[in-house]
Amino acid sequence: MNIAGALPWSVAPAIAPVVLAISNGSYAGLYAVAGAAPSSGRWRSCW
Image (cartoon, rainbow, N blue to C red; front, side, top):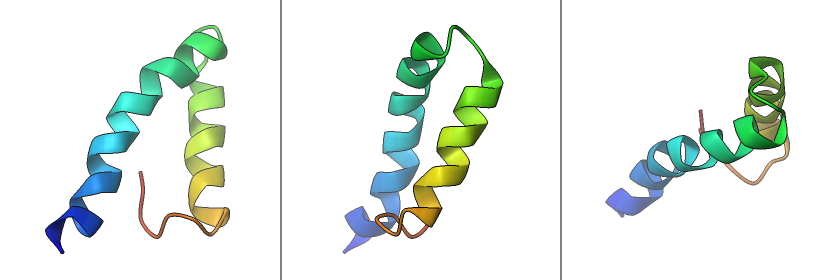
């Protein structure tokens, strides 16, 4: 059951470079995605 707690902490750093590349290096886009992920209801504690 440890993967349920550890998976979001390992997925977020993997997704961050993709989000930065899509948003042309804008951290505002990264923060928007980080803020929207928990409110989407799919992840309990992600970033």
